[in-house]
Length: 126
Ligand SMILES: [Fe+2]
Image (cartoon, rainbow, N blue to C red; front, side, top):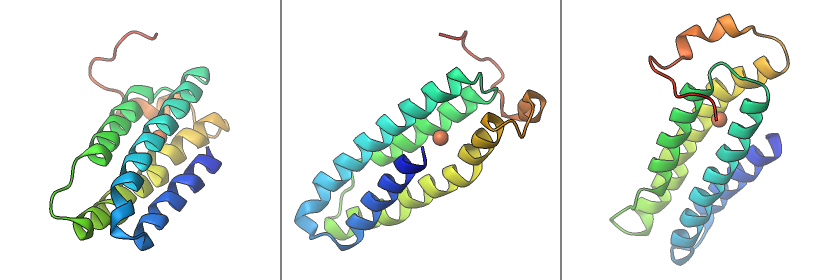
């Protein structure tokens, strides 16, 4: 997962300096890579019976939705969308939900620590 995060960070940094003509493709690649990364992370959480799985997945869905959002206004707006909006969403996600998920997997938390992260109604496990 750390390698995935480093790859995402690199893709976001690339958008900061790429020519405007390359931004739409970088945007599409980043959104695709985010969705693939989140799917791998969700598989890992299922393997470890992570108690905050549904809350974590809900945040993944919101981030992917925002990452895929078409941006009007030209290259400068798209660069800002990638370098500010997507970058901040991903960074705050990594520092919050991802970090407590990793702590749980390392055995540093118990399921009771995640009671506030459960959705009121959670779907049955797959
Ligand atoms: Fe995550």
